[in-house]
Length: 177
Ligand code: SME
Image (cartoon, rainbow, N blue to C red):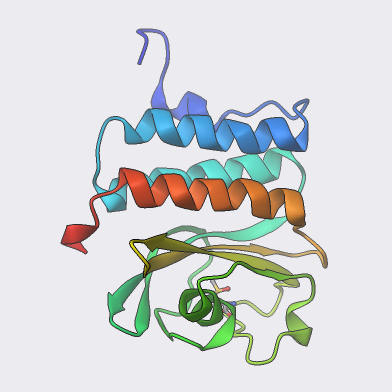
């Protein structure tokens, strides 16, 4: 990092950027930050901050941005995030996160009320996207974004967030979960 650059600058994202440019900024910033450490807590913490600030710069009312990681063979536990307090444990196959974890497929949910079994950590959430983080065929965790608007996320978000999940899978040391 250059002498005049501070870590917090990565979270100062111009609102004049397009959606694609903003999402690319997340990928580039994550890569730069993750070059300092393979510690998953540090990397997912900074990634939650990048996601939170990036979506707010786009005026998308994201109310939760963060992660659940696999704590047992078929169970997720709350991991670094930005937003309000959330449920701590989610079984594979349960809710949007557990479905993404067990199917290893992104869950793009335009209206959470229409997702059978959706776990309402916050009654204000209207839409959600959950992207699995996978390595060598194993689910390591999920990236979860919640929004106060219906249809908060689309295929563009999915494309970039799936790239982010791949970067996360590659850059963190998952042996010390
Ligand atoms: N809504 C999620 C639970 C996690 S919170 O949104 C942070 C689900 O249905 O799995």
